[in-house]
Length: 296
Image 1 (tube, rainbow, N blue to C red):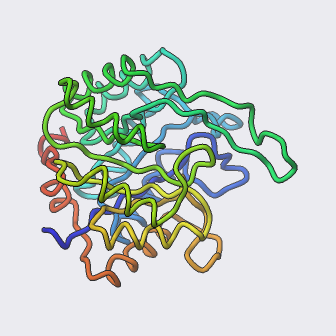
Image 2: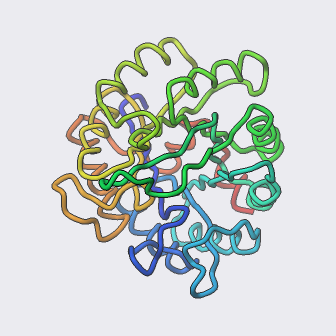
Image 3: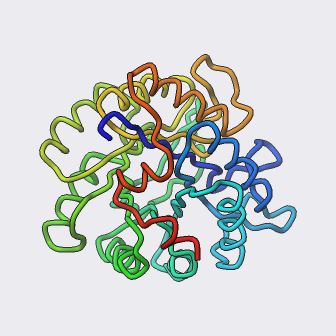
C-alpha cells in the first residue's frame, strides 16, 4: 500500500474557546464533526477532551467518563474509525491522561517526546501568553510508553524540534520501546521547527533514512502551511489537519469545518498521485489493533 496515504483529523484544540471559534466540544458536536471529516477521507481522529459545563468548555478535562462518552459517540458516527488520544500535560501529574488511556485503550496516543520552551510573541513585542515550559523529561515519556504497552496503544511521538526527533531513536536504542516508530513532525510552533518544506525534506532524508518508522506532519499556522502538506505527501508521509492546527484553507479562506480541511488534504494527496487509505487499510499500514479488538 505504498501509494496509500493515511489522513488524521485533529478535531479540536486544547484551549480554543468555542464562543470565539467553531470548534466541537460536546460528544454530539465531536461526533458530527468527526463524521464530516471521515466522509472527506480521515481514518484517524485525534481527540482532546473538554469540560462540558457551559462557561468552561474552553478548558481541558481528564475525566474518563467524559472521555468515554466522546469516544463512543465518535465511534458510533464513524464505522471502523481509529482513535488517537491526546496525552499532553504540563507537570509531573499524569494520573488524568493515564486513566483515560486505561479506560479507552485507544489504537494510538500522542506521546510528546521532548521538552520545549513554548513561546509566542505578539506584533507589539509582548508575549502572547506567559512563557511556559512544555516539560517532557525522559521519565515522563517512559511512564506514557509503559502504560501504552499495557493498553496495546501505539505511541505517536510528537516532535517539536530536531533534537526531539533524534531522541526517539535513543528511546528505542535503550529499550524504552520496540519495533516500529511513528513520528509526528510538529512544525510551525513559533519556538519549535518552522513550517518549511525544505526543512521537512532534510529531516526525512537525514534523520529517518533507513529507519523503521512511519511519519506525518502536523502543520501549525495559516494558509502558508499548505505547501508543507504537499511536500509531506510527495515525500511519502501521512497527513493531518483539523481545527486544532489551523483555521485556514489553501486559498486563505476561513475553514467552516473539519470536513473542509480534510477535503483540502485529500485533494492534495490525489494531485500527488496517492490514494486515500480507508480505516481498515490504515490499521494495516500502521500496524494497529483491529476494529474487533477495540470496539468492545
